[in-house]
Length: 190
Image 1 (cartoon, rainbow, N blue to C red):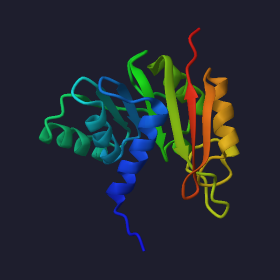
Image 2: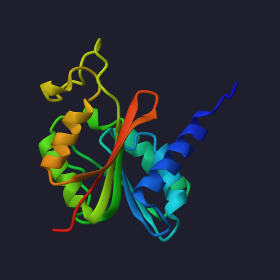
Image 3: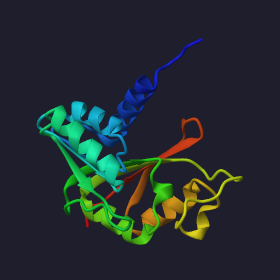
Image 4: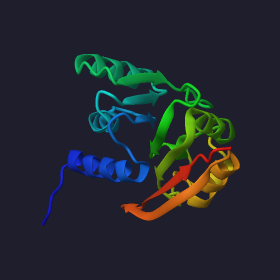
């Protein structure tokens, strides 16, 4: 029986995202809804001192904790950003890639939020959404659109919203981990 720690699983997931999103030293990545920062810190290692990681979060306590950890670890390549319901609050054209892990189903204003995601991506930049289909016997997250169908988000709904915002699907992985799926989008040059 193989028993794996949560950190090994996170490292594996970051390795998969790095391959899909073409991360290398110098890449600029945003982790939207960074939470405790565990994924952001792994990305910061991967993109190195020449790269940059924006860790966004809307929860005040998590933001305070993230800022303290970044200062304690002396991470010059990581910037903590206070996000908002309708906006990432990231600079325009700042990111080579952005990822949201178990966050998209919490977005209450997807049309505005998605437009701001696209604005934050450089031309040719990639967005990965890792999420899960709705749990049928659960309440949707408070304030999200009615089309979610429970806690989670149908893959098709999320794809329609992000393609309407101007992204193109590049790759779909329906067996990401557990019930999760991963969809990678690209911002085409206009």
